[in-house]
Length: 274
Image (tube, rainbow, N blue to C red; front, side, top):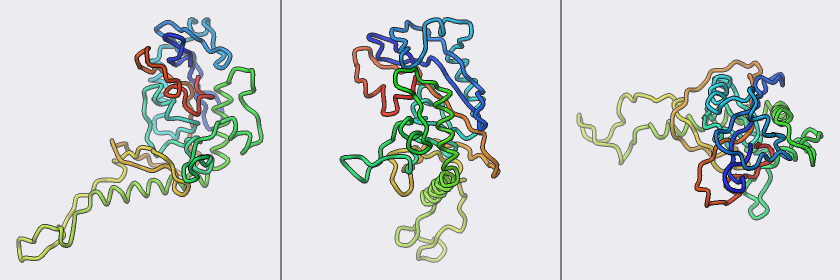
């Protein structure tokens, strides 16, 4: 991302990269910024004015539609994906997201509260789990390298990660079933035909796939806590390797220019957002 607004503290999408399961780049494009860029952050992003002004750069609307088309029906793998999706102003089904920033075995305990898990930096994770170095100090970050690194982390833990995902889906189904189940016992309405209390003879079930959990603070045992909001369809999958995608870079963030709290725009995973 690049900086916009006074002092360049606000951010705008400047480049988007997606790789597939075979680590082949399927999308890598610069993104035009329709307002003045006040800080290209070249030392981190590697982006210069000529990149965004070239004929190769696409509009954010064009890139957003391309990303949505590529990701449709596929598993999305990456690091701090919540930020990337919010930046591009798109959504993706929760059960098709594998985020190394919120995968419990990849997280660390909070220094102040051992029961709370915190995300680790992608650079730190890759060094610890794979033994390789990325994001060399003094060099601009390479989004292709970051995407492949996150994919490698997923492949390393794929079997266990998918078991956790299955548990989360099961929890969602149970939760939905409880919310839809009729009451019984003393709280049930009286049976009009003969006194006492009786559970209705038929209940129209709502498919568990019609709910979308929202990820909150994760727990060490079961991963992210799930709450249930707007519906998303559940995609049916085979046992073959998923088509894996990853997006990087943050997008336009709207706030008054007079309000400059950096933490709101530079989360813990800021190292791989450009």
